[in-house]
Image 1: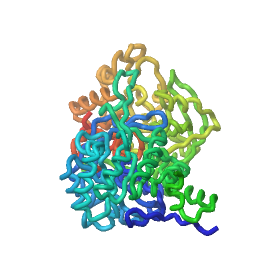
Image 2: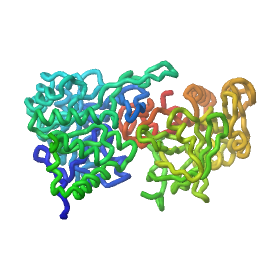
Image 3: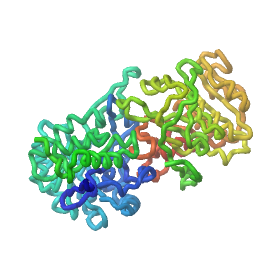
Image 4: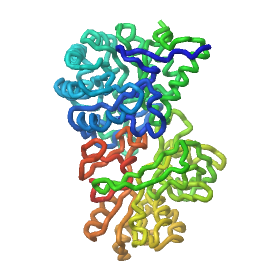
Length: 304
Length: 276
C-alpha cells in the first residue's frame, strides 16, 4: 500500500506525526538531541516556564514506584527571558512544532509569560499548565475547580497570540466537567492527564520518600486511568484532545488515539529510553500499514 | 550512536564548573564476569564500546530487565581497561534493581548508558600529591582516579568489613578507618587522616554526605582544594528531569537559580561551590 498519512492537526497547526513530548520530561530537547533528530517529532513540548526563575523543591525530588515514578520537582525553570534567549533559538533549528508549556502562581504570572511569547517566532502553540501537583499556589489549584479553569482559560485566550492547550489534572471527580470548562473558556485544545498525586514512605528510614511528601505519579501504572479520562473528555468536548499518561510504546499510543486522542505525548518513558518517541512514531506507522489504514486520523476516537 | 572518534574536552565554566562534552552511548553491554567481593558488594565487569571515553569519576546508568522498574540505576565507574574494552563497576545491593543486577553472570546482557557526568579534574593535578578519600561504596571510583595520577594517596573508611583494599594498596599509600576499629584507625576517614598526619595538595572524595561535609571543612582549614562527588536520587541521568539537584553558591547555568544538576553538571564539584 502507499505510505499512510501520519499528519494530524491541532488548532490549525499541522503535526507531521501525532507524537510529541510530555512537558517536564524532555527539557527543551537539548539533552535528547544528542540521541536523535528532534525534527522527527510532531512537536516538542517544553518544560514549564514561568515569568521568573523558579528554584523548585528540596531533594529528594524523585523516587521509583511499581511501573511508575513519583516526582516533586516543583517546576524548577530559568524563567521566560532565559528561555526566549537560549531555548527557543535552539528549538527553532529543528523542523518540528514548538509548544511552550506555561506555568504560574497567579493569573498575572501566566499572562506575563503569554505576553512575552506573543511575538516569539516559531512558537506554534501554548500549553497552559493548570495541573502541576507540586507547587503550592497556581498549578493544580486552578485545575481542580471548573470555574477557575474557565476563568484562567478565558484570560489566557484573550491575550495569547498562539492557540492554547489547557493541560488538565486527573485529580478531579469528573474530568468531563473540567474539559467542558476549558472548552467554554475558549481553549483550542486540551491535554491530559498530568500526574496523579501520590505518596511513598521509606519504611527502613521511617520517612517520606520525597522531601515534598507528595509527588506526581507517572509511568505505565497510570495508563488505564489516563485512557479512561481521555475517552471521557474527548466524548464531552469537540476540541482536540492530546492524550498522555504512561505511554511507552506504539501500542500504548494507538490505544490513546482510539480512546479519542488526536495526538499523544510521551513522558516518563523518555527516562528509560531516550529514543522512545521516534520509535513510537515509527510503530504507529507500521501499525497503520499492517491494518491497511490510509490515515492516522481514522483511528482517532474509533472505539466508542 | 557510537563512541567512535568522539573527542572529549573539558570546558571551564564561569565558576570553575567543568562540563564534559562527550556523546553518551546507549547500548547493550555484555557481562564478562561478576563476583561478590564482600557482603552485598558486587564487582561487575562489562564489555562496552565506550571504555576508552570514560573518565575517572564518571558514572553509567544500568537498566533493569524488568519493565516495572523504570528508572536507570546510576553506578560509578571503578576501573576501565581500554585494551579489552571493559569497565568495572563495584556496587552495593541497595534495592530490587541492584539485587537483580547481582544475579548477572558471564555472557548475560544488560542495557547501559554512559559515560555520564563530568568526572574529577585529574589532569590538573596529575603530578601532585592527591588524597583520594572514600567512604563505603564511595571507594570504587577512586581506583580509576589513581590509575591516572602519579602519586595517589588513599584514605578510606569502612563500617567493618573491607573491600578493594588490595586494589588500593597496589596503587599507592592507604590509610584506613573502620567504625568498629577492626582495622586501622577506629572512627571515620577524617580520624584516620588526622591520626596518620596525612598531607596532600588536593582532596578528591566520594562517599556519604557527612563525610563530604567534614572534608570540605577540613580542606578549607588546610587551605587546599577539595572536590566532592555527590549523590542524589536520579531519574533520567542526563540532565533533563531536574530530579538530582544540589545547592550551589553561584547561580547555575541551566535554571539560573542555585541548583546544579548532579548527573550533568556533576557529579564532581569543587566543595566550595556546593552547599553540603
